[in-house]
Image (tube, rainbow, N blue to C red; front, top):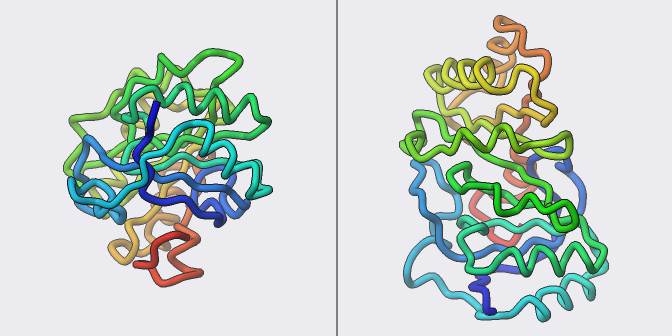
Length: 220
């Protein structure tokens, strides 16, 4: 089985429970959503350049990198045909595999105990324009290693995030993050909102790579 990889690089995780840790990133082509603030929309274009490669080659690249945290991202990585084979091989190789997924793909096919990856799952808020695509049934599948990320563009998004957290995540074991759309909302306002609502189980998280490198830089 071949996979459409548009990027492979070593960097730090910019978000999720393992933010700041070194990881081997594999970015895949294509996404089923079109979020207003997407910072990797180039990877979703029909003419986006990619390398057609197989699971063995990707596992070998990870092995040679010397990094054992692997982040599969996109686009939407779970749209790659037979991606479960790749996930399984990476885990059997001894890697910790994290999937950055957009919240619209059913996670049930990936719950096998021996080959279950870690999920950092978005919930798309109103400013994204994609909230109707969310699969809320996924919330019940998340465990203490997983994360839910709410990307916030303004006040309406904050209120909606609070509604979803209250409805689905009050007793959830997963990590919960609020992350600002870069340049669209003052993070201080988000902290104030967390105080107002008593969101003691929620963490504010900034996209680290946008502060370390140029926000438009690829491969980081």
